[in-house]
Image (cartoon, rainbow, N blue to C red; front, side, top):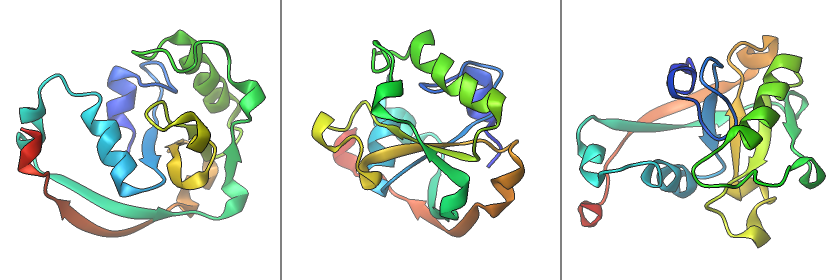
Length: 145
């Protein structure tokens, strides 16, 4: 868990050049987040995928308040608007984990922990408190081809 992918390419909550590890509140949401960023579903079978659980103490997580969401935070594709929010969080070293809404989650569920995404700052001093569970192989349903 280095955050290298987000460093190289950027994502919804960070511009390129910022290390971030992205997690989701449940496996189905994590899989959906992968799918919506693919140009070709065949890429799912190009490399093996794995998943694991993460745990962290409540003291290292901050939740992005609804009022802190700027207009355009959920634009598709992601823009500098949402990246600026995440970059500011990273630069302030505000917390190791930030709970943020998922664009692919229905609006009425966006602020329920199970349906949120969790950018993780691997450069934060509290990153060491993030515990990684057992790793499992992930097999994508072939109907996605």
